[in-house]
Image 1 (spheres, rainbow, N blue to C red):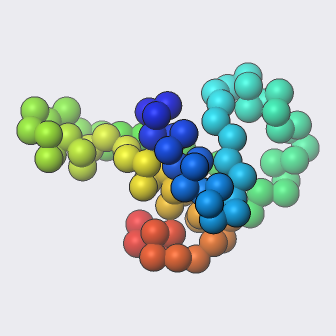
Image 2 (cartoon, rainbow, N blue to C red):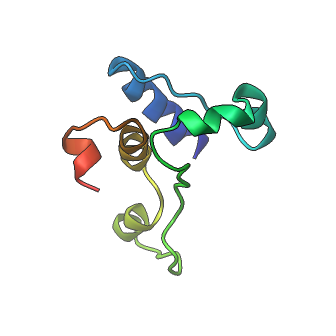
Image 3 (tube, rainbow, N blue to C red):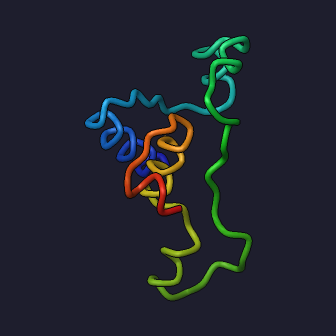
Length: 88
C-alpha cells in the first residue's frame, strides 16, 4: 500500500493538493491535534473490502484498495470535485 499512497501523492501534487504519507505517530507528530478542527471532512481510512481474498487477479483488484481510491478519498477530504472525486 505504501507504493499506492506514494503514487496517489504524486497525482495529487500535480493537481495542487499536498499529501503526506505516514502512519500513526508520524501523522500525530506532523499534524498537531488541534489542526483536526480545520479538516473539511472526518478522517477516512482506506482499506480492503471485508470479503475473503479472491485468487483471480481481476477480482483481487476489486478487493484491495488501489491508488485511485486514495486519490478519490483525498479529493473528498478537500472538497475537490472531479470525475475521480465524484465517482466513488
